[in-house]
Length: 490
Ligand code: AMP
Picture 1: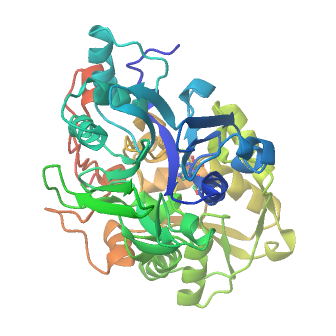
Picture 2 (picture 1 turned 30 degrees about the vertical axis):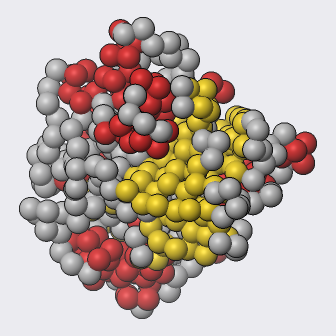
């Protein structure tokens, strides 16, 4: 078991789904999770309720490998179900951490699935343990369950709200009791969560693509700081009510949902992710123009931005890199050496589109620089005359602690090389440019970044974290909040 104050535990990416009032609730949940697979590929779980008891199936691996099996779905009867996909960067990739987590409490059975990271989760956990709590996982979700179990304020939704009030950080969660499906989003609304309906019955999911796959209608986003409680009535109807129980905060959705994380066919806070990414490419072409023969996306993340760059610059777009879709994510491998090998498995050069050409590579982001380094070499090996790199987001100087997998700050390429020129030399490109923060904001919302009240959370670029980072501060003995705003490479 890992040290429960280990920062690495803070890093996991997830997707959630919940549905009430459908006879094939677990199959619909499996489909929804399948559409959310990009949010987490290491494990998946579904909990259902059949009117008498809860059922749970959890698996390591992909949704499609387990939850298409009729035997597995037969073990998940009932008209209410919820599920979770998860990706964690650390060794805590064990079945006990797979969500949804379920517990029998004073208020009855409750299952919780959670997307986001709680920045005081480890501190709360150590306090709970010091007071006699027995923890069986290393997940923040268990902390929420413990806080809920200790609350004495009314019914399950109220106890959940009491628990959530003690959290700091990001959470978009779905919970299920014997009669209710509950959705909640943290006061800043850092991670997305949408509310939809199928045949008039409620559904909650991390992204709209999970509604589309089952033909459900999008109603609206769950708002920042909102708790929606859906309750089965005796006549079979479902009553839906909304509460805003937390101290009011400005909405600050994570910009990385637009940059990398969300699926391009999803709509996040009313904006098409694809259109935003394309506009990032258009803005990048205007900010960092270049004479070249071909625009080549680093697939899949760089593709919409590359289309935008190509259309704006009138340089042809070609698939100069072919992606092998049967390989997991670059990040999935634990060590740097294996990860580097993984890049080769994932991408190969399409020599016919590269040889003797001035190539402009477009990627959505540079994190450690592993992908860029390998791909640039691949382009040179395939005979490219020049290789330029344009990145459709600003330089990443700061780690994320809200549910996007990023390494510790010292492993971020922008921190290892203290200038754009040094990064260019390391990656070995003829030119290197990043989209500016204002160019990114313009692509997302048509406005510049407001330095006093940023409309989104952009901490990985600016160091402006919307919440305290209590666990990190406790571990490092420092208070981390608003680290060096607008640090620029020289
Ligand atoms: P790196 O190779 O470490 O520089 O990572 C950047 C590459 O990984 C880009 O091609 C991105 O599309 C992709 N990427 C960015 N953020 C993440 C993330 N949180 N998890 C997995 N891949 C990512």
